[in-house]
Length: 304
Image (cartoon, rainbow, N blue to C red; front, side, top):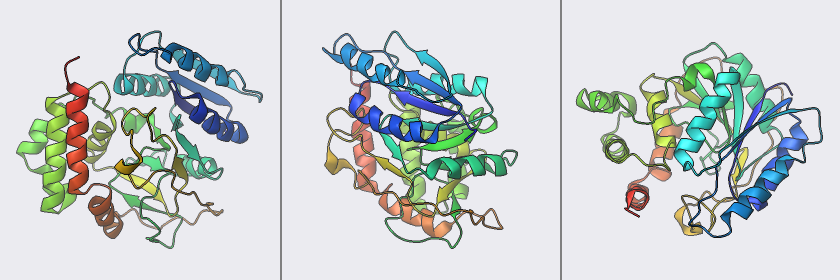
């Protein structure tokens, strides 16, 4: 393996250890570690952060470990964004994993091959390890293209990340010109994402960054690669989770992973899979989920 990995950690040694073991098996030559600091108002959190960081000291392969540890708590959004900014200031491309996203071993060569293949193709912004089609096979190739850039285990390039803006300054113009209708082609989806983007724009939070990443990709007409089978299992739901503290919130908890077969079978075209995207919108991003997102945003901006 030649591609560097960015590993985002915080205070969960039990999940971090499982992801670290997967990284250890892959043996990347460079490991960028991004860690947030503890919160004084959370007793015992400093010890958890210390225990989590101690896991990184177990690197026992030929690897350059580069650390970016915050002494203070920046919050999920600022820590993740500043960390990824830092990674892409050092390298042109990277595979990115959070401390609760356990990858299948074939996730790494899958990302590595596609990072090289689409390195200079601005039509592609990210490579996802997650597949949320719930068993539906959407392609005869190894992957398909989507407007949804799932980020539970993903990879990207500096050239794509440079369009990211956590404050979504272009949103008022995009909204005024009705651009989402051209992207989504469905009035329910347009209403859903318009409400969501407006909420994020009006109420910037120190916990939300992934919707802004989706927005950044959309306004550049950039697609994401989705594997034909799921390669990531998120084990982070529960009381220690930043966003989702109940297993009932998402049906995607602990999704099983499958092997990606090699050599990869590349599609001979770069066209969005509309059928798969409609399914994603109607399941992962259905209206009831939006109500949960609104509650999440309100909770995050609630005065302390």
